[in-house]
Amino acid sequence: MKTKKIKVFLGGYVNYTNAQNLNCRALAKYLNKGKIECAAMLFPNGNLSVDSDLVGIKLFKCLRPQRYFRYLTYLRGIMWCDVAYLPKGEIWEFCSRCLKWFGKKSFTTVEGVISSTNLDKSIASYGSKEAIVNVYSFTTKTYAITKYMSEKNKELLGINSDGVLYLGIDTELFQPQSRPRDKLHNIAFIGNNIRYKGIDDFYAIAEKFPELTFHIVGGGIGYDVVEEIKSKGLRNCVYHGLMSHTQISEFLKGIDLHIFPSRSEGFPKVTLETASMGVPSVVYGDYGATEWITTGKNGFVVNTVEEIEVIIKNLQQHPEMLGLLAEGAIKLAKSFDWQVLAKDWETVIEDVYAV
Image (cartoon, rainbow, N blue to C red; front, top):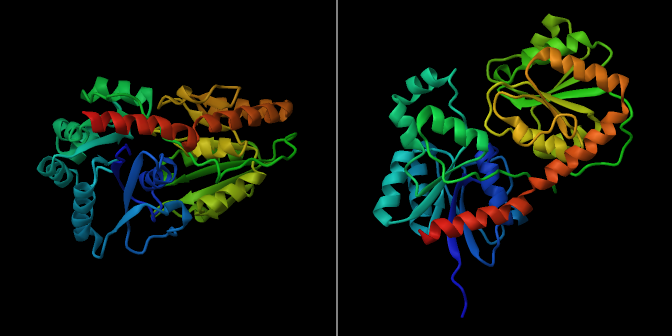
């Protein structure tokens, strides 16, 4: 007897670049098609092509104006599915009602940490502490994307997770190249909204090491990177603007070290994408990065900009470490490959469906 496939609505726009959207696109690609039938949404005039990755995926196109027609698009997806994955928190109150009206199972992922330092700001944004909790409590099950996040959000807000569900990367897009790694030359910063990602620390490090080249990829509304570099007199800084995943993969072929000095993150997958290319990351430990990065083995987790300076000096004095770090970083990335993690997601989907 043929087993019924579970219909899963992936609540993301798979043709538009955004962290949650790209996760949904990867899930549509790698979830077992023999057990699961997937559907997702298309954004009006999305910036990603609908290609072979999405063959066999049911796609609900959102019309313009998106701010209004998104309600209909979500409604169609929820009506169609057995299980809805709703990661974005977009129009969550409407989605909550739809799930109840049609008796659908669902799950979401908590992808940010409300820390003690930004709790008041978050409460002001949402209206109340209870409102924050409600955003993550309207689905059948709720999963955190790191253990640290699960523990912190329970401690500060009382958000209970049903488990940890890691996000992955598509290592097919980030394949390491065989190349000499015998001297530290090029250091990169990759991130959007870079004003809030610790870019000032990156500038400070660049100033201390004029013999090295520091590359910046990304951008931010109302922030002129070129003018900032010029005003600081940093002749060893190069700004590359925004890049697609394909362009970043090509760019990383010439990078030796990635510095990501953000203090507030959920699970910065850029540290895994660079790792997949054999480029280790240096990050701050404020958001529990020791959960996946082991200092000295596949990257570095530090607390101060001074520690980053020490690491760079050590790599200059002991360049043989670059090759060993590259090997460790590649192994790290493989453990977070969507092809590996998709099995965990399939188990969650089956558990939610069985509730």
